[in-house]
Length: 341
Image 1: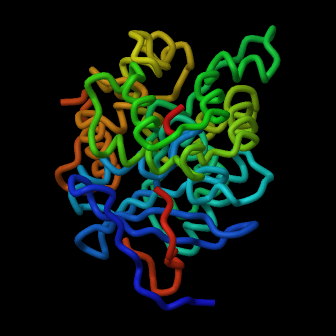
Image 2: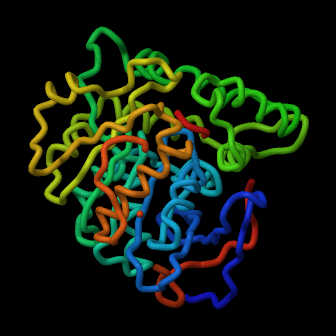
């Protein structure tokens, strides 16, 4: 059933760009998504997935650098942000099914499928199992996994990789400034704070003062994280892609350490087929700022535009991309103000 209503326009701060918030039916309820429309309704569409404890606003600065040349659609994935009330089962296949449902609702054809971190694994899995509505993929610092240490059980492995993020999900904060302080102390955001970063982390908060908490459902994060680290079908997806794809990898890691998730040696050892997946280093960024920092977001946007065939896109490798038919998106009246990994 179509609900006819004006789509609400949202703007977190005077410095960031307006977006629309929609709810689209999926299994178990409605998936919340944000949309930054292009100037031309016929412009290409980018469908972008966020990281494991993030939310759709992690893509806001990329949308800014698309500069109206492409529409960007980014969901709050199941168990996060505005989609936190969607029930399980969780997991990468469930996210891919949600993506496919939204793509069908919007009537997408030839869209660019993108993802950051865990979202890149979702994109790769979707590209293998639901390829029909997409033309190419852009994976940002994720999507390519490596064999996990066999001596660790899944919970221990998850704690070793994203332990700080998991512990944050159990924390409470007395007010929004306290959450802002928490993130401004994070090494990855040192010298990189911005209105986009602030809007992104504030969207994660739910509850009321003095017990604000992350919107992320711990069970969803645990299931998704375990699959990204250990599930053979999830790990194999990037190698089974038939659609053209590119992987943008950040120089530095989750805590801004010099060793990022990928480097030339690790990529060479992965035995990737360059005819199917090209790799591009993004210099002077870490796992977060490749998407939320200005240089990183500009580079990612350039690759998205290039993948969409838009003039002005770039296939560069360092840090120096439609509106749906009537009735396909259901406007959401309420708006909820991970962060990262």
